[in-house]
Image (cartoon, rainbow, N blue to C red):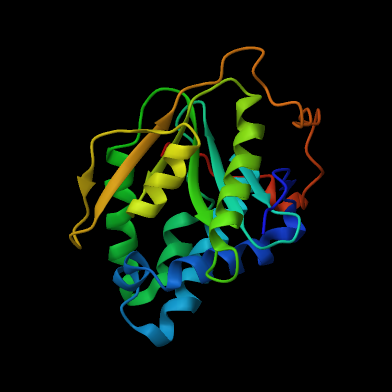
Length: 226
């Protein structure tokens, strides 16, 4: 089955659906098992952490969903160092409990190898197992990448498997030097140069001039360089 490449730009009301997709995608991976070894706690912990970062992406990045809500991408606009989520240390510790240190180690490792030049960061590609998974992954990446291409900056992603790398390669990402995590996994960073002027796809809709209003309590944030 093929999927149309247009994607929906997520709103605050889509956070729960996005968190479910991220949790389902990560919970069955080697990385998810390392982050939360206790299988009975894993999905709850991963969901709580996914909510922190999904909320943050809607403030300093973007989230996109396939129209059917079966896959998502979570992006951060790294024009400059972005702030940590509000009350991040406390929220992360509360969400992770005894697994807090592993999440910090992962975050530190990824941050240490992240490009310093301005780019858009594809932080999460959430495509749960199920029918047409490969087609869904291809569609949600293609659709959200078209949105990013309208902004004229390179894009960057960390990949964790051969299949993940191959998918990004098909969409114009180039491999950079790999680096290990403490659990022995290799992270494969990938970089997609900015699209040339005039090459924007015909099906791409222009970005709206402003985002939909969000709850007032989410507008005030503690700005800490990250």
